[in-house]
Amino acid sequence: MKKELMNYCLSLNIEFAGIAPVGPYNELAEIWNRRITKNHITGFEEKDFNLRIDPKLTMENAKSIIVCLFPYFVGSNEDSNLSKSSFSIDYHIIAKAKLEEIGEFLKKKNPEFEYMSFVDNGPLVDRYLAYLAGLGYFGVNAHIITDKYGSYVFIGYIINNYAFEPDKPLDRTCIKCGACVSSCPGCAIFGDFDINPLLCRSYITQKKGELAEQDVEILASSQLVYGCDICQDVCPHNKDVMHTPMTEFAENIKSRIEYKELEEISNKEFIRRYKRRAFSWRGKSMLIRNFKLIAQYKRL
Image (tube, one colour):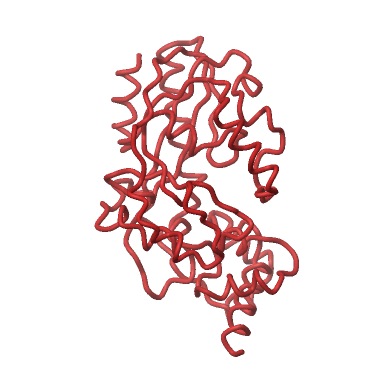
C-alpha cells in the first residue's frame, strides 16, 4: 500500500512524500511551551495546545500521517512586490486538490480508508510533520529545507486510519552560516532554530490594525507589500535550486500589484479579481496600508 501511495504521488508530480507517526509529539510540546512562555505566538496558530501535539484529538482512529511537499519556486523577479509564495494561484487551493486526489485514490484501494487533509489550516505543525516524515531538515530560520528545492516548498498532510510505516527524520540541519540571522529586518531569527514570529516581516504585512513604529520600520525594509522573501533569498541552500515541476505553480503568475489599481477598485471587485490568490486573504485595505507605510517611511 505504501509503495502504491508513493507511486501515485509521483504521478501527481509530488516528489517529496513521506509518513509521520501519530504522536503525541512530546519534543514539540516542549518547544511549543517555550514559545508560549515567551509570548512568541501570532494568533494564526491553533490555539488548543493539545490539538497541536496529538493528532488523535483531531481524528480518533488516526494511525499515520501522509505528508507532502509542494515546491513553488519559479524564479525571482526584481520588480515584484509580492512574495514568491503568492505568485501563483493560492497554494491552499492547489495543494488541497492534490491531497484530496491522494485520499480518494487510497479510498478506492481500501473502502475502509478514512482521512482528513490540511494545507496550512490544520491543527498540527506542518513543518514538524515534514521533519518527522524525513522530507527535509530544519534551517536556522525554522524553515524546512530540501536539497533539490531549498526551502521554497509548501507542506500539506493527510491524517488517516491506515498504519503506513513511518519514515525517519534526516539527521542533519542547515549549515548554520548565519546569513538569515543577520539579514532579517526584524531580528526575528535567533540562530538557535527558534524565531520570534511577531518580528517576522511576513507576519507584519498581514497583521491587523495600526502598526507600531518598530513594525513600520521592519515593513519598510522591503518593497514587498505582502509576505517576505529575505531570509530565503540569502540562504545558500536556496542557491541554484530547481524550478517547480508542478505546472499549477508556474501558471497564472502575478508577482506585482499596483497601488493605483487597489485605490480605484471596490472591495467587491478586489475579491472578484483576486479571491484565488494568497495575498488577498486579508483584503485590499491591508495592502493599501502597507503601500502607504512603506512610501511614507522612505520619504522620512
